[in-house]
Image (tube, rainbow, N blue to C red; front, side, top):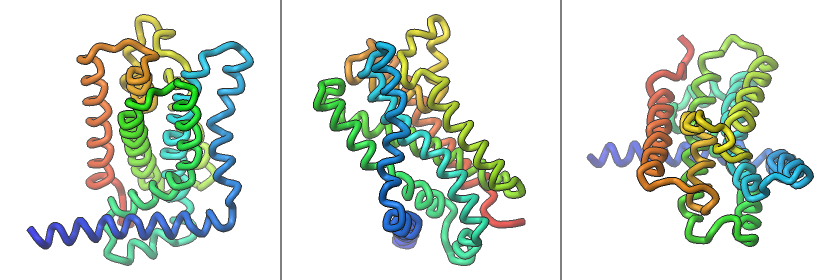
Length: 252
């Protein structure tokens, strides 16, 4: 039992060390990257204001976009870059668990996106788009969405080892944009009519729907809310299990 606790502590410590190694140097070299990440998610808000869209939906979409896009895109691009400059091989040579590497690699871009998330949260709370009592559930939904997409991105990057970095960059951007702008993230899922249930199948729109439910923007029964949480939780567990058991960590 004690040995298991020690192993878990080491995995967590390794994850934070990797996150620090991957984020702190970039923060020192490119501090403006923090602003750019927030601006990318804020672009749809500009169009919502111009064309008369519901701005409260836009702020929730911006928060989901920040964690979702950077989750899957960074997981694919950063790990591909690590492989290109031999960082991954160096980490593989050490007794590091795949889950520690994945968590550390995913936490690094989350550090970059944290100021943007805090900014959008502060505005949403300040203008009453997001009630204070829903803050805890909002953060949980954002973190679960980030965990799902980061895990999926990690698995994709390890299976496409022979694909060029240019191709992987395009794939990650298409996946990121597709998961943000096609499902109802920036717009209400009621616009989909009879197929609005499809929003539950995407971690981004599912998380957005849960946040809207807690903020009072959409009316969902307690049973539907529980189902959506269970679906999001199942997605997170399955995606993490894929990292542990299916990701091609070491070269074969």
